[in-house]
Image (cartoon, rainbow, N blue to C red; front, side):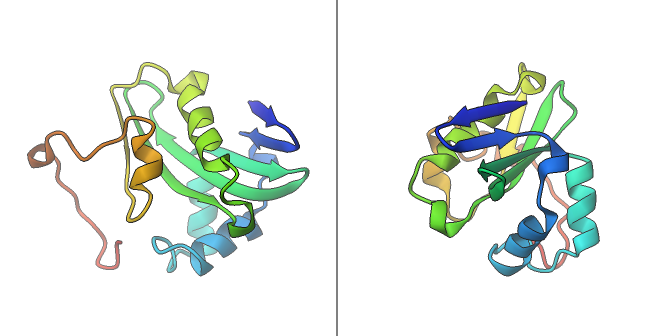
Length: 143
């Protein structure tokens, strides 16, 4: 799938992804994936629906969705490189994710964030409605 907006493109073609940029951002800039190995990044990409944001051929943003494509989806590893922030690209990325035809009719979408509540709330995300029903088994170094 592909979406265009001016000189920018969002594509789900994993062959276009620049793994060096993605892994570099995740381990060097993010707060959630600093200890991730390149092998883990590559495996996560292989097993997800990925969305690359491009300025021409250059990857400038990324997100991935882990889903069974029927009932549930988790959005993770969302970023836009700093020099491209403030242009509405994150909002466009979220709209593209939520409009993806293989992700329609799901019962639940989830994500985790420390600092982007303002972005995600614009798309209907809120605190867990029933946190007493959720459990987790986090790794010792999980964010």
